[in-house]
Image (cartoon, rainbow, N blue to C red; front, side):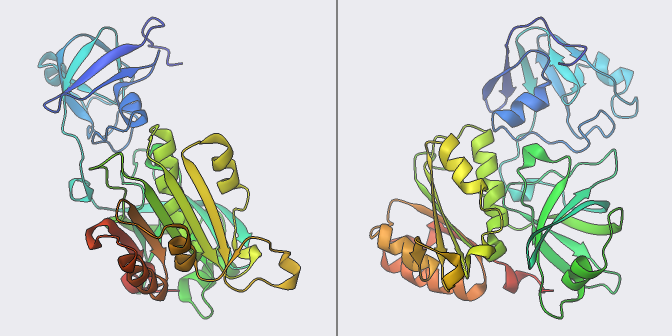
Amino acid sequence: MHPFAAGGLKVKVRIEPSGHEFETLPGETILEAALREGFRLPYSCRNGACGTCKGRVLEGDVTLGDYEAKALTEADRQAGWALFCRAVPQTAVVIEAREIGAAKDIVIKTLPARVVRLERLAPDVMRLMLKLPQNERLQYLAGQYIDILLKDGRRRGFSLANAPEEDELLELHIRHVPGGLFSGHVFESMQERALVRLEGPLGTFFLREDDAARPVILVAGGTGFAPMKALLEHAFRTHSTRSFHLYWGVRARTDLYLPELPPQWVRTHANFRYTPVLSQPGVDDHWEGRVGYVHTAVVEDYADLSGHEVYACGPPQMIEAARQAFQKAGLPDDRLYYDAFEYARDPG
């Protein structure tokens, strides 16, 4: 609990001009509560240093935790401004703030980051955890990606695998591309505490929420699981009531590189289903599940996709095959959202 917590009661917050309302838990800042409830307010550092989350308190009282004077001047405070990352409501409050509705509303940054952990998830998949400078956070939508900027001017793009609400570290899933310049470095010589430069967030692959009742099918190929993990963790964190069905297509059982995670989601979230699909299972896999192409498994289960939204991420050949199959199953073109990552980004 924050040392500057209000009482022990939930407090109502209303955002103007949208009229959206939510409640803060005891000791919770306005920004923490807004993100928990799925309302995207602008922010960056989240520790009172940058001023990105500054907005006006139109009604009610808040207590501010520690912050840097350059982020909020005394004149700002006298005029009713506050830093929502440090503001804990003492009464019901009305605030004035701009809500982020799409990727175009988010600032793209170029930042340094330090490697804090390298974890091999499969023989050819590495989890890379990056930490930004102390006074920086990367605000992004679940599903977006970043570019790692190489010294020779080239760049490598990787989806962010963690939900925006868990942004203390940035999580990437990197597949080892034979002969790949960057992935070879990650697997063969990169050390913890190494520095990299990144640009992001990038891309328009994120969950649309125009129709919160429409069921969602997620189709991942290989490390296309990374943005799906972010999308689902965000949906679970924000208590989405939509139904989600994840299909994860890989070659062999070892390629399901976080095998315990989706079944755990099945156990803890009644609105989530999971279907792994192997295209070339070996004898040693002892596989009794679905076999074949992942898009084929989808249309076998959903002959009519006209009432669904589909999000697909994987190699371009998977995306194209899925697009054709789903179109035949009645999926409108404007309800297929995809990230064909080898087209958008230079592999390796």
